[in-house]
Length: 288
Length: 277
Image (cartoon, rainbow over all chains, first blue to last red):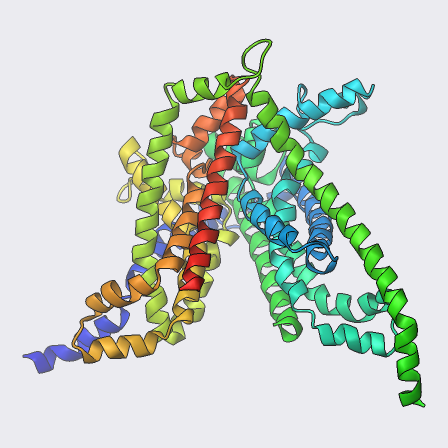
């Protein structure tokens, strides 16, 4: 009895530990995405078509994608640069040691402080009656008169930097730690100035890491929905907000196009994660 | 010649390096101050607003009103319950999986790592879009009632926690010798269930706790998925509050920041304690 049943049971036993994981992921991660993918190829009269993807070039979609990409590029570049400089300051800028742990702790908090509370905090800071707006008024500058608005491209970018900079700090600090002291000493012994060391040694070694993390920041901002929703109530043309409106009511007047917009986001996110991991692997060659 | 110039160049270099270090320090202070300004001003401004609910004087009236709000406690406690169930669900799925791909099915590791990265690839708004489309018609009708939508929400949260949970548990497993511990337990006659429960879980305490706390911090104020599933949880409540009230949202933002800080602080604490032991 036992002999006959043994092989299938041990086969089952081999897989039983990972089975729930694959079933669950299929039901709540992969399945829903595949359904959107499938529907994005469905025509309005049935049948498979690429029409929905062709219509991505329509004005409403391009406007939202354009805004999302502009905000993501801006906050990835600025957040990447500022985050790098702050990480550099606490790791090799000669600051007292406690600053480093203070910055990493704060970054851990701030990178997770996204969504509604973040939006609220900036409304009280840079909104129409915000504290900083009021301070500018005291100085005779009408912030909103200059064309600035918290509910616009620049406003949202300033808000997004609040979680973009900390993410950069957290990811790039270990890379900075990976720079070997020997390299700097070797460069100095060869007569290199600090500038030459950075230009010819440190930056080339760090570049894949910096670029990769900036791409990660791009994706981080591109997929963000909650903060923008809480701030603008869904009014700004953004890819995530457009999808949100499409869920609540077919604002594009074409369900198929809605699915294509969602899949377009997934593709851009997948590419950014892919580039990030490729660059990260590349940088591990030196900094690992 | 090389040998003779070396000490000379070093002697010349020394003051130059010192000057450079001083310059560095100046720049470091500058970057750090600018950053601190950007990060602390919004918190300060929000805190200031939260003390101004009473005309003419500073006080905690905004906090009192927030906590007294009829919707605050119900939505907050519902979110806490959701978070706890999602954490346990996630642990129940991820711990055996991470254990299995470390010990028995190493070949599956790339597939598992790939899937646990999916929540980064699929934005929350896209995920909820797909979930609604998948579960809004028989045989998988789950969006019809509030309760069944809530099940869907918790499952989505568990899935969202996979990247953090898997990475955390996987690191924990790497830090101990899984194979030796397992073989020792097996030789004493322990079953797989006993091994997981009595050997692996206790050794993973720090990893599990930090994974759980991170999940908690992310899920507790989650807006997007809860919003489109029409759930009365803390995220949609906070969004409503921000739109409808003047002072309470500032108190809410400060409370949310303190919560995030507490979760992160506890992670740092358990990690440090774990290392000490």
